[in-house]
Amino acid sequence: MKALDDPVDVEPPRKGEDPADCTACNAPDEAYIWVSDRWRVRAMDRPTGLPMVLILESRSHLDLGDLPNMLAAELGVMTVRLERAIRSLDDVARVHVNRWGDGEAHLHLWFMGRPHGRLQLRGTFLSLWDEILPPVPEAKWRENLALVAAWLAEFGGTPLAEPPRIDWKAPAKLETAVPLVLDAEEGRTPEENGVADESDRTADDAIADDWTAKKDGTAGESDAASDPHGPGPADTSQARGTAENGDSVPVTMPPVVPAPSST
Ligand SMILES: [Zn+2]
Image 1 (cartoon, protein in one colour):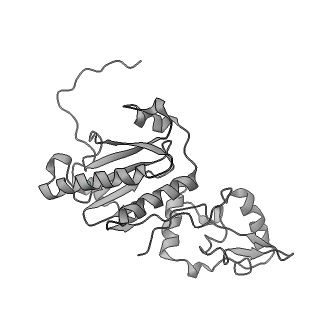
Image 2 (cartoon, rainbow, N blue to C red):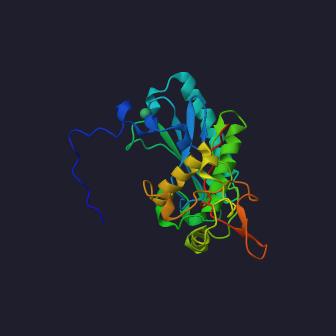
Image 3 (spheres, rainbow, N blue to C red):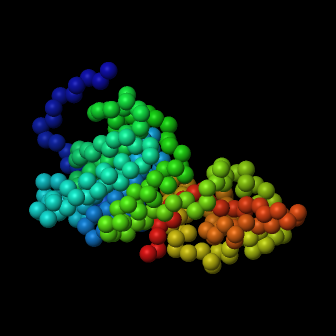
């Protein structure tokens, strides 16, 4: 049971009241799944308990009541568009749209997909259920993010989330990484293992690494700790080495990550 606190005389400032300290204003477009000139949509940094949780932000440092008429009208259009996009997902029955505004000062609207058939989750407690439910499978989550981003891009803007390029049955973690480390120790070069040279890495790869690191909480750690060759290329054919018996074997690939579009 929570006791009701006494009211304070003066409320503390919210986070990011000053644009210089504002998380949204300082976030690059790559942190979002879709961007346009005036709006950006971002996801959580990891799979959520609900099938979809997204945040719609204005690009300008404004709060809801500050919006000029044109942006206010466009907020209505964006709200409807994003609601439809999320509702189009198979596992979403309803989309809750919330604006609290108690935490961050920069305008942000929450869009939460209520899972299909989960009648118990109807109503005001949906946001709490998001923290209680086990996270949805990561591959499905990323696929849904890409679907929503593509839906929004039909009307303009730039989608920055793409579907997983390879549908790994199991995340490429220690089980697959260990034999590959042994391969490398036996004198095979990364090229012989079918992995592209580091110089072949693209900016997308670096961004993908960054996402992965943030998701795993390993930002700042050496890549070598978990992945001796760095992420391989996206193309399946290049990403496979050849075992002694000629069978194609998977080689080091990062876990499925969103690959922000370069376009
Ligand atoms: Zn801001």
